[in-house]
Image (cartoon, rainbow, N blue to C red; front, side):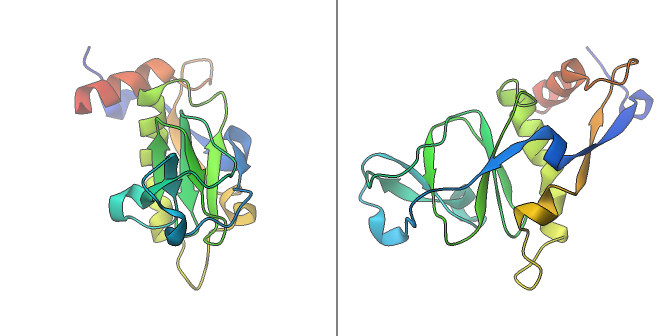
Length: 156
């Protein structure tokens, strides 16, 4: 199916209304990576913020979530993971992330936050939740998940 993006109706959605945010419960660090257990997600772009694997006891976040750090770097996660707490990384979850294609699309839409936040203006959840993203809408004003999936499928 072909979609003309200029014909798609887009709506503005506040991030805090779309997602629930959580943080880790243990200050995991690079020294905790031992090649075992779950991936350790931290801030940064390198390797999508993944620092290695750790079996140190800590909260495990489920797959089908998005992480966003204080610089505005966002990544869809299709695997369980643990998170560092000292670098302000948030795990975003919610019914809006219906599947991997929707999750990838949402992470792409959030990627503009890299231009908004910096070391001098860190993206705390209090700031991030007030920012909006644009998503395709149905004629009734709901999120057009079908269009999102078609867009990502075409990119794949």
